[in-house]
Image (cartoon, rainbow, N blue to C red; front, side, top):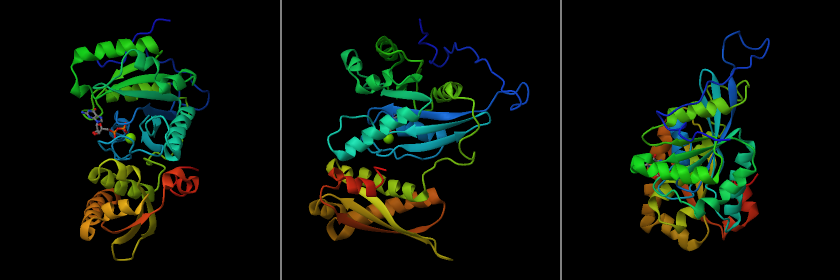
Length: 329
Ligand code: GDP
Ligand code: MG
């Protein structure tokens, strides 16, 4: 079957309205049935998956940094609209696993594909990979057999010329049977509305899975940990952030006073602990202050934040620590 790959380009929409199958006795005659389901966002590290989810949900659900592999968990973002509820699974980038933490991250991306009703496979327009690279792309191999509609999402089009996008569309279309193709900019919100509407059409007719005022199933604790981790990613180069896990050990709401949040930051070696704390505790203090500001914006209330650093030898290679930090269930 010949597909129309221009259908996802804003201004080139050609899709026909979906025939509505009324479910007798459930919807008032004439009203579109409610749709609810899961959309997994899959792709290499740093292509902009978390940015897109935050933009679509309209809130900072997933941490975004200029460094790859900052997302370790599968994060759930819920968008409730009048006629549908889309539940996004933002995943860690698919990569070749080198140690146990990587393995857990990749497993989580694969399980997101399994849970999804529609898959958004995202690439970066500034570095799309062409020809052979696409053919050998491991994520596409996994998607070939998943039996779900897959959209190609070409992100960061604000950084490239229009004429460079068409060859990317052509090469990808040659290698995979995408249901639709969307060139977008998650930052400039170009093409994102069209993408949302196309995702919604793929969802099954189903009542909302979550209360409509809920934006995520994750707890405040989880977000506070992520916000601390985000500051560590922003402050340090390579090694340290990737060796870091954050765990909230106490989250006390105090009557008439600010909340007290105590967090432990785990690294893999004493030398890393020294770097993280810095001379006279300066580095840690800076992380604490920046993280506290972000946490206060997120919680919409003032808090005290106490950070402690601990070294746990090679925790990323040890299943018990991965479990403890919630990277393994
Ligand atoms: P992820 O690893 O796929 O989740 O990628 P992130 O969402 O963390 O984004 C990685 C980097 O790309 C960040 O610096 C983002 O600000 C940047 N980014 C994401 N989307 C866009 C976009 O549409 N345009 C531009 N110019 N940058 C983007
Ligand atoms: Mg991410």
